[in-house]
Length: 297
Image (cartoon, rainbow, N blue to C red; front, top):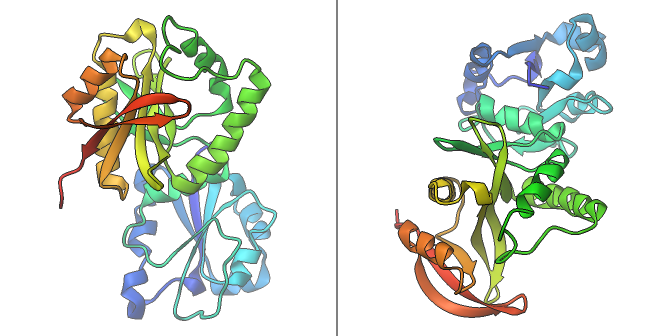
């Protein structure tokens, strides 16, 4: 599935007096990404429902996204598998727009990729988050379970990290809950690492929230398949994660908790620029806390 069209009601489009809300550039540029814009004329909107308009124009709701500024228009998306982005328009005060997937105040930072991610969320399509020279990191999905069990079965993989649940169904339930809570709420989490050349899942890495001394801190975790050790993958992946965190997340630092006997990880963290902060007793074990601080802007 892919986003193929964006539909909006012509009567709801901001005029020149609301230039800060202008979405004409966004709509006119959709063709560059293989999508099209469809504007519903006011007269047409008065006669037809959204479902009828889509059907008459050969548009499949599961391939589209609706931009709405009123509760009346948003109500027409109910029951349709179409993604929705609501926006505040001064000409239509008092709108609740509660059932929209997301509400934006303006379109200055809204581009095709933003709309595509909203579309992906609607249809439970995992986000591709980070690209590196040899890999890319994307969100997990249930179809990854076989590959994850294979990953964790590798030699020494669970020496310093918790194994997956022995009960596959229990692991699947945990994954579904994690996806719904972590990805959907925070927009980041632990991702899977896919090798570009082979399309194979070769690791798991990303960012999670960790309560340290009563405050929420950002923690980085990583694991690379045993047969890909000593090839620079961990360095490549972690550098990309740190870059992502520094550019897109509002944290001043990234933490990493490691067992002091995990010498390979300790050396990697020092190489990446982490510094040892303290020893902590967490989850029933003593862990070494290393911290990477972003330069002040």
